[in-house]
Image (tube, rainbow, N blue to C red; front, side, top):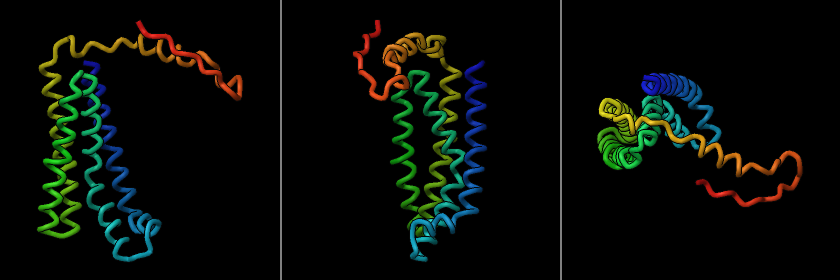
Length: 173
């Protein structure tokens, strides 16, 4: 139950942050574009991207959170497969079709649609995996091992001396 609440909170935060980022980028699209180029056509393209593709950043954040969750659930190949599918089965074809239909605006719209579809699909995949998860999958990692490794690698106090002496790291048992 705690995992489900954490995922829901993370998704809500990502969605809200994406909306705030989109609003800020859309509002400041012209000044941001002017930083990168003086050419009016290129600046218009940058501004168009910031107003079109950035609209789906909220679901792209959900996609990233869901990918992280899949890794935590010990399903890294699933997360990688969905990331590759998002890139090659969604983004490239949708951007190509959008470009054919509506030019540059269509390309950016295709990218935004791929972000939205991938975010929703990955979130759905996570919910499906959580519904079929065994206790073994949800068992937390052994953080004591990670903590011991961190402590053993930080035995030298870097702040005490301007030149830290490197020590070999003890193997983890």
